[in-house]
Amino acid sequence: MADTRAHAELALAWALRLTGRLDGPAARPGDSRAVILAYHRVLPRDAIHGFSFLEDLVTPLESFASQMDYLSAHCQVVPPEQLIAWLRDGQALPRRCVSITFDDGYADNYVHAFPILKRHRLPATIFLTTGFVGGQSGLFWWDEICRWRAAGVKSVDVEGLGRRSLATLAQRDRLLAEMKRLPMDEIVRRVRDVSTQLGLAPDSRAAGDFVTWEQVREMQKQGISFGAHTVSHCLLPVESAQRRSVEIRQSRADVERETGRPCTLFCYPNGAVDALTENEARDAGFAAAMATLPRDVLPGADLYRLPRKVLNHRVSPTVFRFRLSPNPERIKQVLRPRLRRSA
Image (cartoon, rainbow, N blue to C red; front, side, top):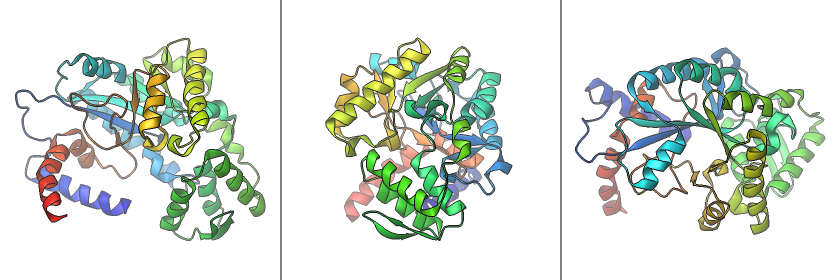
């Protein structure tokens, strides 16, 4: 399904490019919009071949560098905190306004993305899963499942789910989707049990797969800010009320303790949010919270469900420009009445 959507988006973007409309129509009076970009991992292209972990989270370093070149030359890149202040105060947003974010706190954000951001003097916010900073909790569970497949495992027995095939990426992704329905403690236990059954020892790369607090503080001195992304990367709507509260509040406290600065922004893992989770983020004192609905940020946006556009290796230069343009929203406005009539 992801590949189908990606192919459709690419075809549409190229059609607009060939007709000279890729960057959208000229701004109209009253137009006010912004785009928040969401990255995860940034790795050199040659490191992606045979990658053991979840490749859907990776943006090639070469693509990221090109995208930052484009943003620096053609857009007004502002910290998310500034964008949120404008939204809160009802101010008009500047033309081609963009904010850059990263989720999870992978070490390659420091090794590969940070030097490029620093060279262009581009601000960004990294949302840290604080229990994994410094590799203290091993790999994320989804990367461990991907490691099974990379080790040549064709199928596994998962408690409560039965025998699951890993022969294709689609089958692996179905298993990931099923696991996400479980509370985090259950996911971790069942994944650990399967790895033990397979004879896979803990991956020695985990210790270097995440940023350290020392790296966080170094980046902060160069214009990178940090937000909270829970402690364990649990999907909050699946957890108990007590667990939700601890995950949200403790991750904020961790970031503030280690950076020495207020932590005002939160990001829902996997963009999973419901009314109770939104209220919890608000009650915890965050000024705003990010989701992953791929939409533009418009005046009056819900500050606790801010949309973001996720980027990865599927995003070509043409698709990147398409996502920054007003075209996706205007196409949706045209199609929405037609879809309602056909429903």
